Image: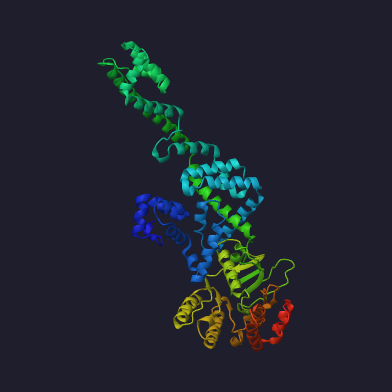
Length: 592
C-alpha cells in the first residue's frame, strides 16, 4: 500500500518515512499502531498519533461529530494513558479509537477483561516485578532489543495468566541469548563485553599504540634496567609487553624486528609489526564472534520479531487493566433495536473521580431497555422514551450528567469498560455533544446549529447531548429552536438529552420524550448548595435562587449588604430564605 493513501501522510511525511525506515517498515508501523517507530523516523508524535487513529478506524473518529465530543474522547485517552506501564504502551493507548464494528468492540472488551482479571490475580510483589520489566525495557526507547529484554524480564518475574499468553508462547531462554547478541551487535558493531578474548585483543592493541607513541622513552627505560645488547633488548621488550599489556609473549617474539638500525628503530618496528598482527587477530576474532552472535539471533527465530508485538500487546492490555481497576469500570451490555438504548446505573463522571472529588453515582436511561440495575437500586428509569429534557437547579450537575453519558458512550464504542455499576449501550454512528457556550450573538447561533443538525440528519443513529441551548440566543426564540430540535431528534429516530431552563415552553413534548429534573435540597452547614444529583424522572426541576440569596444574606459583610440581599429575598421567597438560614444555624440577623 502506498504511504500517501493513509490519512495525514503527505509528500513531506512520506519522504521523511521512506528515507528513515523505508516504505515497507513505515506501512507495517502504521498497520500495527507502532507510534514510536514513526516518531523515531522523524514524524511529530501528535501527528503520528492522528495518522494512526485514522488508519485504525476513520469511521470511528467520524463518530465524534462535535468539538466537545472530541474533547471528551481526548480526555479519556489521556486519563487511560496515565496508567500505562511505559511510554510504548501510552503511545499505543493514544491511538485507540471508537469502533464501529460490533464484533471488533467485543474482541477488545474480551482482551481488556482478560487483562483485568489477570492483573487482579497478581500479588503485589509480582506486580512490581512486571512494572519494573516494562519500565526498564521500554521498546519506545530501546526498540527491538528492549522488547526482547522485556520478554526475558517478564518471564523471570513469574507473572502468569491469560493476558501473558503472547509472551509465554515465546522461548525466553533463546531470547536471553538473543538479547546478549543484539546488545553486542548494536549500532552495527561489536561493542565491549561481546566477547572476553576480543576485548583482550583490543586492549592489547590500544596498549601497543600507546607504547609506539613514546618509543624513545621505552628505549631509555629498558637501558635504565641494564639492557645493552640485542638479545637483552628482545627479552626486555617481551617482558615489558607481558607485564604492561595483554600481549602473549609468543605473539610478541613473532613480531620482533630482525634488521633494525638501532635500539629505537628496533622497538618502533617491532611495535608496528605487533600492531598489524593484533589488527588481523581482532578482525578474525570479531568475525568469529559476529557469526556466533548472529547464530544466537537466528536460533531465536521469529521470536525476536514477535517479541516487539507481544510486549506491545501485553503492555497495552495491562495498562488498560490498571485503568479499569483504578476506576472500578464494568463491561457494558449491548442492545439492538431502534431507536437504541443508553442505560446506566450508578454511573460516575471520570473527570471528577480522577480529580479526587466526591461523586454521587446517578442512574439514567434513554430508549428501550430492560433495566438490570444492581440489587438494592431504588431508581427505575422509564423505558421507551428516546428523548429527555433535563431541568433543574443551577450547579445541579446537569452538564456533568451529559458529560458522563458522553463518556459512557465513547468508552463503550472504544471497546472499553465504563464507569458504572451496570450499563447497556446501543451502537450509534454520531455522538453530538455540545456544551454550553456563553456567547450571545448570531454567529454562535449559526455555528451551533451547523454543528448539531447535520450529524443528526445524516446519521443512521445519533446520540444528542446538548447543554443549555438558550445560552446562544434570546430565551423565547431559543425555546422555539429547542422545541424544533427535540422534535427533529424524535423524527430522526435518535436518542437525546437536552439540558434547559425552558422546559415549560417546550410543551407539549412528543410522546417518546419526557422531562426530568434535578433538585437542590438546601444549603449545608458550610453554606454549600446541597443537591440530589439523581434526576427525578417525569418532573420539572427548578432553579434555586432562594438558596443562593440565603447564602448571600448569611455571608453579607455589613448591615446594608444584608438588607439589600433581604430585599432580593422578597422577590424570590422570603419564607424559604428564612427557613434556609435557620436550618444552617445562622438565625435572624436583623438588629445586628
